[in-house]
Length: 177
Image (cartoon, rainbow, N blue to C red):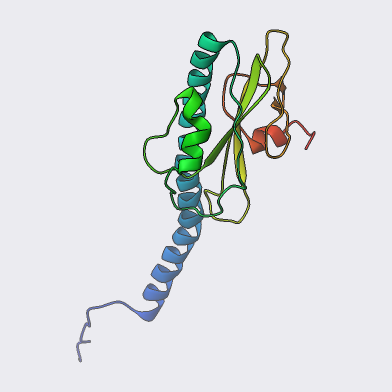
């Protein structure tokens, strides 16, 4: 009787199944990874908008008014950009400056002496669509300033949202945009 000689290694079917499994895992993981990267970049805007709000409050305590800035069309690069001299001049009166390079462009709209909306603009997921995050501070009567570049008021799904960063999806949930 002849004994079969056993070969070590993988069969073609085993290799194809392994490749298919790796492909499925990659198809799931890559979009999730990109989403988490964009979310981590968006956290920069939350931190900086909160800091802008605090410095605007400090400036208001001293002068009795908020400061408006202007903004250019936001950058469309997902890479960090250096803080420019023009940005330094805009935010100089309130004494705010980000630490290091930033993914977002920032602006403040103070439409009355007692309310403002701070905005962050950027394309953090590199899809060619500019995203923005708002921080609204109403006046004592509950009046709001619209966002500077797109003119969007700070209204989320449940009504006005104040003193916390608000992203475009939260604005769009209101059904008004």
